Image (cartoon, rainbow over all chains, first blue to last red; front, top):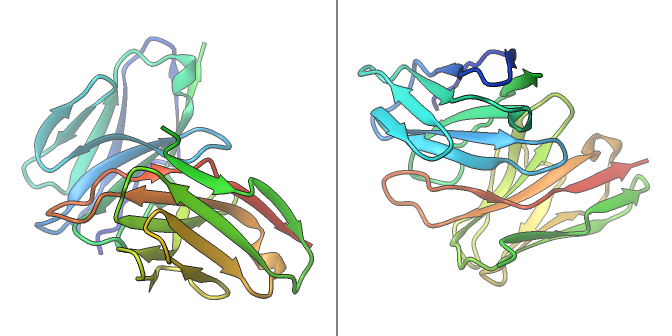
Length: 110
Length: 115
């Protein structure tokens, strides 16, 4: 099972781009990389998922290098409402191999 | 579209009491999950189900039982509650497997306190 390592916390000023990197050295061939966002007193919410290279949606971008041993979630021009915990997950087929870890607590400062 | 609904949202139990948390989803998802989240920690998988009538153990199954009698419902039971089970419980659902793990849709959580 691929474990992930993320920074415990990050601070950013409003309007800046934030990059959160996740290490997953033991990622398997079939594993996908998924990021979730969690606000206090709420369940996690899916942000983005990818397998390789770059994925972009209306909320974020996900950069995955060729060796896939790490990934970077990029949040453009963060606002105060982006203050949350961000989880990086690595997993493949099956329902029992998604481990959330402790996530990265992002605090956006005015 | 309600998505994933958990009941109750709050509950206080005494040690040794039993209770059941109900999770209902209206997205016709095959997979359902129960997680617990303790302060300062990520979510840990308790039990999961890959279809109606099936259940399986996750990372921290001890002290819990589950049932999936109907596709849309996933019940989490505590037969004899212990203070160590004080936590926030999240239910989630997703489409069936495939080559990758699909998006998990989470409920709003159920906060359980065991005195």
